[in-house]
Figure: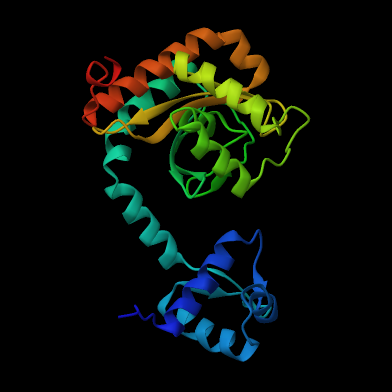
Length: 259
């Protein structure tokens, strides 16, 4: 029997996904054009989403953005994640030790999603925000996760997602990245030097579950000059140690998976 879907629900989810990816609020026609729906259908669904709090309408204009209800659901989801609970203490310690921004991410559909972030006492302008997605090929956390995957799977991800250049230092050649991933696999530490954002240097390491699968990664990020002054090698080793302890608490055995 062919599985059937509720069309109106699918359309509502399409609208929510479009709004989540938009950098600013969108009008009914813009939303309709992006998902191939007539504006009357979009408008009708938006009224229900607004009524339930999942979408908000700007008072001055006929434009829409995600509502507070989405935030509430997201916070509940993040708070229930086991990895987030276990990693929390380690993220705090790393942030205190180096006074730089610390991240925890999960892989999803060939990208990474930031699920936790600890701030530095110093003002740092970075793109990363909890709930935001980012590419794998140009982030330390993404490369850390890619380094645990078979080359065939890595190449598939790179082919599907592409390797756009965000800065002059972004690696856009699959063969060059594959070679770097081999080194990351040996050291357990990934370095991203101004490949995603100019002036920002980041070090990351994977986090494994009981089965040996990399289910996330952690990182320390900051201005390149400060990270270098504090010691790339020192920060890398501390991140690696934290990643190993988080993995152990998730049931991963370094002895069992490395014999």
